[in-house]
Length: 326
Ligand code: HPA
Ligand code: ZN
View (cartoon, rainbow, N blue to C red):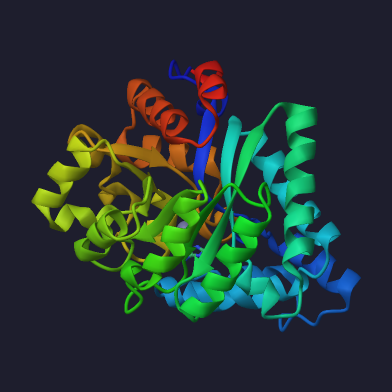
């Protein structure tokens, strides 16, 4: 018998989760039919066979293409609820959830439909399962800064619409510093601020996210390992890094799971957390990531508990809720 703990029973917070990245092929086909959208694949199996990526941008191409099936608020609610059902079964107790408004507004889907639907899913999970959440609007860094400025102004004008802002999409060539003004407006309004940095691009992007954007957490951040002085700073400042092991392997940032540096990062004193990023595309949800680390790297129960505690501490759940989750 396995004396080790059931990792799904470990209460978890997830801090790096793109709701669009939870769209499983089965739901994609169901929504395509409901909305009369043509998916260029014959079957669920054929769509799933496309999930073999070269790098971040080859993933993003498919990710944005399949979002075409999401049209109205009911679709976003169904998507969010399906994610929460799966994650709840793996111990999820809190999520700071990302969404990409521009992936939808460019297709004529209004921001309010997206937010209403996602919030309905989050609210139901809070009432029915006690899962708490915050909502983070991410700007696509490979689209014009002017669009992000419009979005942040809309968020600031409607308090409660979102709880924070983030920065994602194709990283190399789109450094954080481009979004200085966007993030300054978000911070001035009291919104939480995070950014993807150091996923494919180097340590200088992580430094910019800290120094120019003033982020509270760094999403991915694993390229910090190329710069020992930066690692030392991240340790000293207790800056949380939202690491996504399955994502890094599938997007070929890391060779295989057995090579993943997450436990070395933990031993170095970094405030690392484990997250699923785009679980429908990368082979599993948050508990699956923990299990993968146990199988490939010998993650101990004590290390799993430390990783889970880091996530609670670094989450945007309020102080009362964070205490409750400990
Ligand atoms: N990186 C950048 N942008 C993204 C990702 C990611 O891992 N997932 C969804 N958008
Ligand atoms: Zn991400």
